[in-house]
Amino acid sequence: MALSSTFSSNLSLGLKSQLTQSQSQSQSQSHTFQLCCKTLPLMRRTKANMFNPIVNQALTTTEVPQRRIGKHHPNLWADEFIQSLPNHPYQAPHYAERCGKLISEIKHRFNAAAGGENIVSKLLSLVDDIERLGIDRHFQEEIKEALQLVHRNWNDCQRDLNTTALGFRILRLHRYSVSPGMLGPFRTANGQFFCSTAQTEEGKIKGILNLYRASYIAFPGEKILDEAQEFSTTYLREALQKTGISSNLLHEVSVNLRYDWYAFLPRLEARKYIEIYGENSSWARTEDNEKLLSLAKMDFNMVQSLYQQELKDFSRWWRESGLPNVDFARHRHVEFFFMACAICEDEKYSAFRSSLAKSCVLATYLDDTYDTYGTVDELKLLTEAIKKWDPTSIDQLPDYMKIIYMVLYNGVNEMDREAQKFQGRDTLSHAKDAWETYIDAMLQEAVWNATKHIPTLVEHIENGHVSSGKRPTTLQAILTVDGIVSENIFHKIDYPSRFDYLGGFSLRVRGDIKSFKGEVDRGETNSSIVSYMKDNPGSTEEDALNYLQNLLDERHKELNWELLKIDGVPTCTKDYSYDVARGYLHFYNERDGFSFAYQEIQDHVNQILIEPVTM
Image (cartoon, rainbow, N blue to C red; front, top):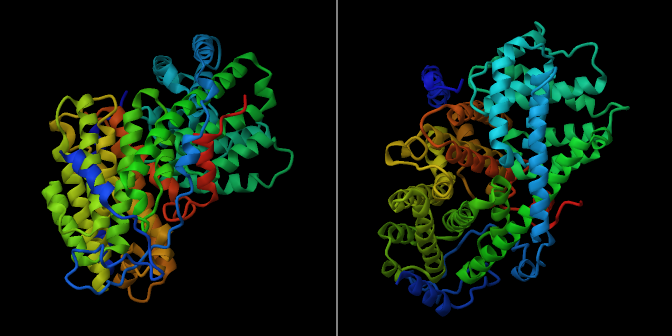
């Protein structure tokens, strides 16, 4: 049975207005572009960190405006390095032939698991391994049939905590209507959970680990999953200190605690689970598991070889765009391409990866222009020019803005042509609206910063979920995957849908929490923390962080519901939009990974794009 929309009525009983209530209580276009880039001088900052006033022709005075800068580190991935990547050996045809043979052999394993005893447990374990190893796209029909069998037999089988938690998580993510009440028999009166006394210590840890993973797939009001998350987090942290536990299990626990569901991107999980799976000597002794591991490794490396070819094209686009000359902004194009690949491994979706990465690049240059470098007068000119959507309207812009405008103009039009191939119609009006509302929200924040105005938390978030950039960076990309998003269902995933709002809300609040100190150093006053403290005199930064984290947790549950309910939006479209939000949250897992690509982010870029898995 699939999820229906009946749950939405429960959300309307206060959940959707929780933020407001809380606050009331407390207070020749391509040719034109090429000419523009060729004639612009190479722009470098002076010692005062500002452009030469001669360049800034739009100003009414010869006095150089005082500008804020982000002090961002330079690009870490030279185009010369990327273009020099050798041809990947896994492009050879015999690897594809070997993978095809393994896929065929593993498909027979589903039939074997569906017979004999413990059908539910065996099928769930097989599906879980295949999905976490990143090879599930090869077994879609088999997984569908396996889960139908699991669901039919659910009430007739004996289950332990491990199987129950695993089943709840997998069935819910595949949009079956399942209740977390199935975990009730394993819960004590004081909110503790227990495994069978007959299980080994490692078996108990595995069960609690799956309970932890299941707790994140919660809907609003499911208190038992809140208790499960609190209990399992404490239990697993203590388990890491125990002796006599196999290293691969401790590795698995450590990885899952470090990256919760919202920050654990599919391809990154595959890379890490391949390592964990290969460390388990008991698994490696069985032929079936050796086949799974061998397929996962070869498939990962073959897909990575495709990523590298796409990365070369993408890096070349960035280099030739003129954007490297806009040196006050963050040059994070490779990191954004990593995010796109970590979300979407399917070979046929190269347009999705390209569109997502390009949109993120465009939004970042606009963000740094509006947030830090541009003056309010310049920003008003840029906003007006973008809304006209006509390259002839940019004459009054400073030259650095001309570059950004033309890359935006050409990029959005190019992505619209790609989307038309999948949707069968022109969707440019939706893309233009997304970018226009984005820059309007950015301009509002620029005015607030310039006037030192601190909005209320409600005002900040209503504007901030738009200025987060989630909508414009996602919209055109998700139109290049399977599924026609007709006009009559567009509003269910695009603005003003609750799904769109929650994605932007998640990015805005998580970003505020993780980037607060850096923004203060840059002189920015727009932050959820600052607004909360203004609304609540006498409150501390810690009070604000606790309030916002609790609010974010509740909104994530609602976002889960919006993702998994059946409402006519193509599943693939909605899944990838949701995963884009997770991609952004990954950069904010520890701190602001957009402003500073710290070592872990660099390692992940290497693992997904550069370094193959050892065979």
